[in-house]
Amino acid sequence: MAPGVDGGSRREAVRAAAPPFTPSPRAPAAHPAPPPPLQPPAHLDGSLPGDYGFDPLRLGEQPDALKWYVQAELQHGRWAMLGAAGVLGKDLLGAAGVAGPAARVPWYEAGAFTYFAPAKSLFIAQLFLFAFVEARRYADYQKPGSVNDDPIFKGNKLPAG
Image (cartoon, rainbow, N blue to C red; front, side):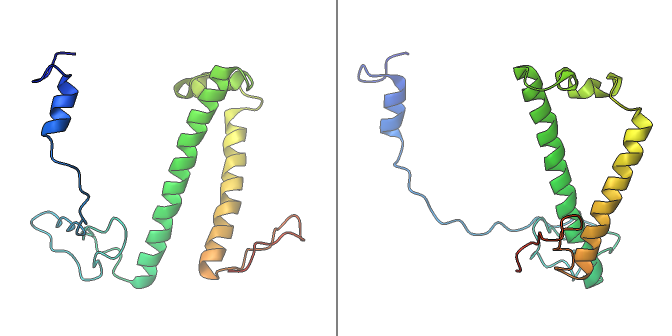
């Protein structure tokens, strides 16, 4: 490193000149307004995460619909995180040589790999599995706690609350 003012390193000179760090309390950031021709609707008051007052089609005016959209967005985020973890986990296991031959195929070439069943059969099986999961999620949305019992193993239940 190049020497500083008094023969020390440049990093030491910068540290000596910088004021000491003192954390300051931050005021909550103001949400940006929607684009100029639009006014924030009354039903979006900034209380929801990611609520920037943008609902040009007024889809969330009914409280029940808005509640459903909030849950749907949480679910989409969970699926996205699960998909990213699946891609990364498969690639890591494949690179380590721990998993089978399908894990050694990069995620962007997964469609070219020959699996144990035809792609149409896997797609249809996946549709049925997703339909089952989504039907249970919707039932729990309609009546919270209604699907806490395991449908296969009757002795298993989620804790109340």
